[in-house]
Image (cartoon, rainbow, N blue to C red; front, side):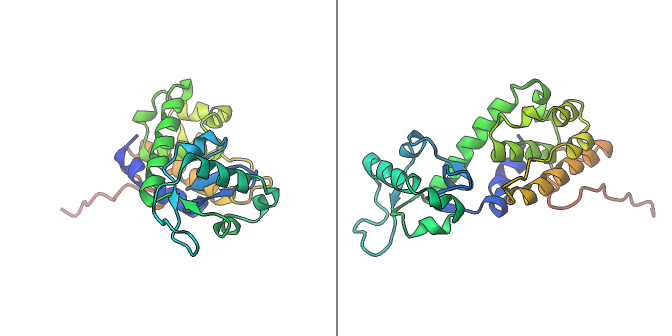
Length: 225
């Protein structure tokens, strides 16, 4: 992926997912942290560098948490099924562990790399590295929301990507919003990203530039001289 995509991936996703350093249940009841990073099953949590929060009653703020401590907190949050409908704030007071900002960045980077590695092995996306940056961000955004196995199921969108017809991709990239209103703004962003990519291809603009959140337009040529 282009550096412009990698460097802005966290800030792109923050409006849709928030940045949460403690464990919480997402709308499906799956344990999540960071910028919408699933850590479910429990093994995904115990490998992370959790540390103790700086809050009243805790004697070792900032110190590393042990694997049993992480497991206990994970099971505590997972065990209350009502938390899925209460949002991440409901879990703030219930948790004693957190990830540092550096830990969150590392988690995002690892998942992003894994998603990209999977996607480029799928036939419609094999030329991913040659796409405009906005198209790369759109596909990675879809994979972030659904998992990397999701985008290949969007056959018409995938066919558009394979043909560098990103207008077609834009018209067929909508993720199902049923029961998940939080996906609405992401769908709007993904559509604009693919539309930008279509404009970049049509006008032979710089593929490495991430134009989002602006609308991609080619600068007018000065003919005065």
